[in-house]
View 1 (cartoon, rainbow, N blue to C red):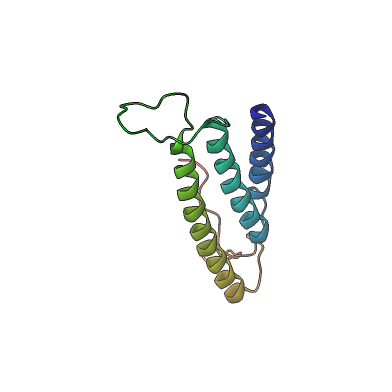
View 2: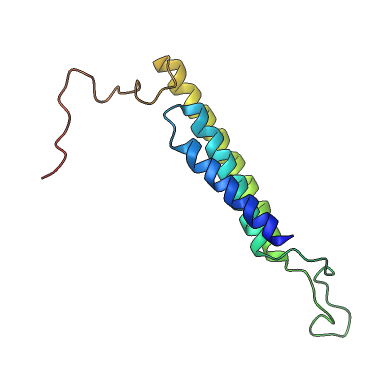
Length: 125
């Protein structure tokens, strides 16, 4: 099952990078959301998918008796979900503000700091 998740993670990362290279903000936001899910799936897959018992140490023992599941990837994924959701919400509000101010979601048309009539900066020194 792990190779399937590895391929799925690669597909998600490819789609996310393709969407992030777009010049429309909505596609970029979708790319950020998919990238967050791809990273979560990568962490989940790297933690190995097993059906072991929870990491509970019995009374009178110093270590677990048999193989146990690793709780660290699960904790990292829960934290990453919260962070990626808040980051996505911030980007959504920021893009809505930019769209309502500039009346466009095309990043090429959002050149407020560099108007069309000014010369481009030098490309080399």
